Image (cartoon, rainbow, N blue to C red; front, side, top):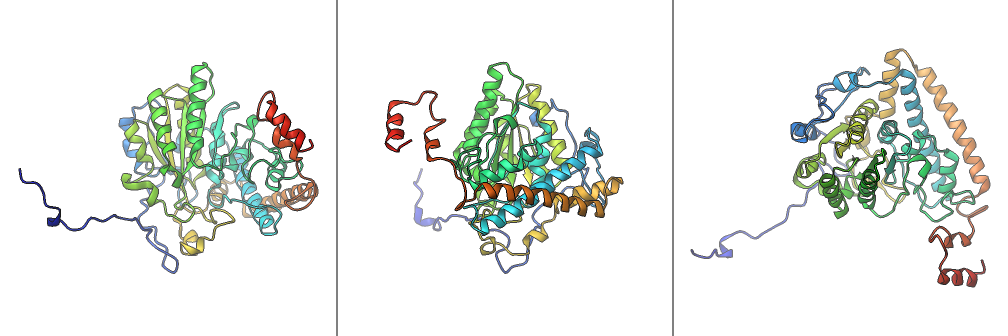
Length: 417
């Protein structure tokens, strides 16, 4: 056989994916295939993953444009209007809290902040599928898990301000919250590490014969990290009781989601290579999030193994207060996002049910704003980034070892503590 001559072929090259539109262009989401609300089937909880491969290439939706809950996923929901009103309040609280803390960062009262704008339904809705003792391993954009679990807003503010009442005692970046009692593992600034931690925690729960499940969280950009793939290997091999959540908000820090997604078509489709049931859901539909999260949690509790869920949403704000999204995407793109605003969609659903109104919504907004403003005043009175009371430097030596080793004792003594 004659050896090939490289000169007979054109020069090699790489393909670098590009977003549909850059700043100055017209926003275009025509590539997002959106299934009609209520049209996507709901498999049995114990269905074989091979029998639901199609669910990784569509979008499960419950709320239609008229604010009605339709389809098989809606029919399986056991939720009252009061439950939905509580969920609406959780999302409104998160959005107003975000706005206050964003302004506080601009006023140099804290060093850093990250908004959840447009993504409130995902964390606030998912938390309702969990039970006390279950554990989330979140990223920095799931504070709604804490709010929906009843964690005090004041504690969140103190952590953001790193004041003397900061539960983390100044040893974490702002928004890197933690509360074991509320099923919220410490947020790590290192990307994707929480994914393998969640799988390991779920495996430990199963090994010990416990009944608690875990939830892993990751953004679309971080799925390019090796920890993401390692987590899927262990979750699928050992059938760990874990829910593997991917929040696809279209943009990493300045890179569109196509870079991390690769050629799989969707992030959910990556689960197929591991034999994991994989679903895509409308992340701006509170009821759809509730329905899919409940389905996955039931599967884990029955010891049927992991589920991978991709939430299709849009990051309306900047990646963080260090980011300027106008540098890489059109300013009008947020308004053009076809899945709408999660708060407005649930509000309209409750109005359609006759349990809410525009007037009551305005009153609730004013009430929540007043409550959060009052708590912010109290937190700022304790201390902010440059003023007031701060944690003692002596705290850096604590919570490292059960018994402090000699070298730390020496360092603490040399520091004068």
